[in-house]
Image (tube, rainbow, N blue to C red; front, top):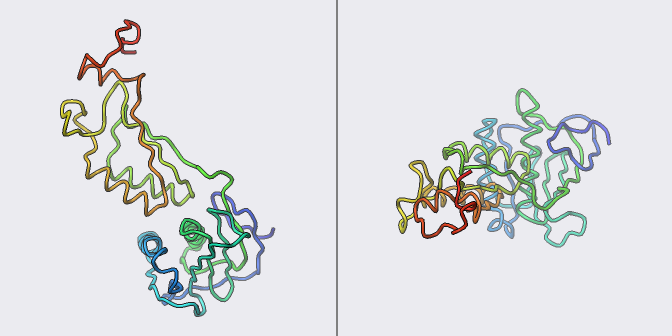
Length: 246
């Protein structure tokens, strides 16, 4: 393992070919016709991220023969060589990202983006062959929105940073004794003044899907439910100790 690129998390295996592959402004994303439907959303997300972060426009073409400096995205659903969320990244005369799933393709794209960030001009990739896969199927963070309201822009940014690090689970703690953060048509007095609407949650779910992230919502019960029992005292425990806010 030589000249290992500085990727977070670190690549599992890397064999350097030496030298660099320059990417021209005409660099394209090449997708086989049989894969276009499964990779459509992932490809669109990679286009958006590459342009927003390093100002690199990527044209998508349908085909199987990449030109010099192109990026080929290839699904191999039956490969025994690639882990479920893993990928093989080969950088030589062109770039090939090969995976069993769209998630693996997406993670290979994140590795490419990190490599390009390390070049001031965002145009060169170290030639080599990488085999990469996560140690754990679920990798994530928990964000406590019950105690503090986090704006939508912040949540979008958190998911973008998670995607860059190949984290795939966002645990949203949406209620605590301080506040209930989901707006409710049936119980409008329950939610805090700063709470997420149905459209907010729909938007978060859509963006999470683009980033290959699963959102796990949490309503904290039976503990930390003071805000709910204050809204409707009939829901509180009759036990004096359990009814006290702490």
